[in-house]
Image (cartoon, rainbow, N blue to C red; front, side, top):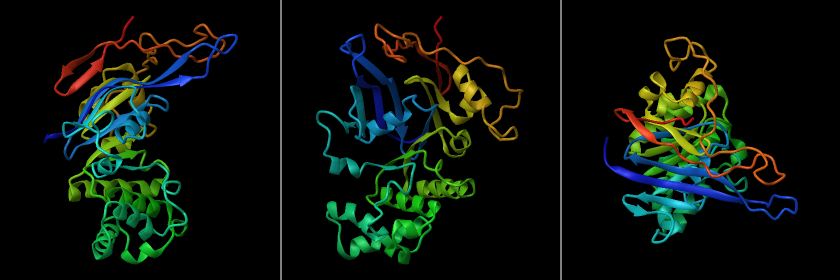
Length: 319
């Protein structure tokens, strides 16, 4: 694999919650991301998978600078991109961009496609024929025409709107694109087209992807490496082949066994196991926690993430 361009080291994101207790004065904290570390190589697609609420989207927002980390560092080419000494938002926008889940909600309904693509260019001092040429070329690259740039978002199908969202993410020529469930809001018949488009664009522009997804068939098709998150922590990570053919953590096995199509290529050759749902990581606690509020979380206590093979790590379970 080529050079490392993104490093996330010991990322923590915590949110204060309304007070508990009889008088509502107790302090409570939600631990959304706890000690997450990984790296991204140039030209790689790294997928973060897990159920809703596991912390994967919060991790993505932290990379984009849209969520302030409580602790830890995020570096682009060795330099911090959030926190003290980080570049401005304008400079960061040229390093990383994001494709959102809902292509309609992420577009301004009162702006034409051309206007949406021109706005970030103008902010970065690119105007006139240079801007027009870049917009026309990019629309062609994502499978649209330059003439369609004069239309408004409501005039396009869901798949076409996602193509526009992808074009907007690429207009500043970033090196990293964060894909937040990029095809989950689309019809099944359109998903393969967008997945293939993303792969083609990765080759054409030398992009590196961080993809957030719960659709393991998409993950298998696009990913070089996979991180499995469970209760705010990484419980297993490795190359996609190692993860899908030799899953070691009980939660990873449950995810793979839950793939609905029994004939899917990801389905392991042996019969799915009756793996019990793993317990939360040591230190997680549900219940009152000294208050009257349900589902109060206490700080997670991380067990060890150990190497079990080349580019394959798993978090040990604690008794």
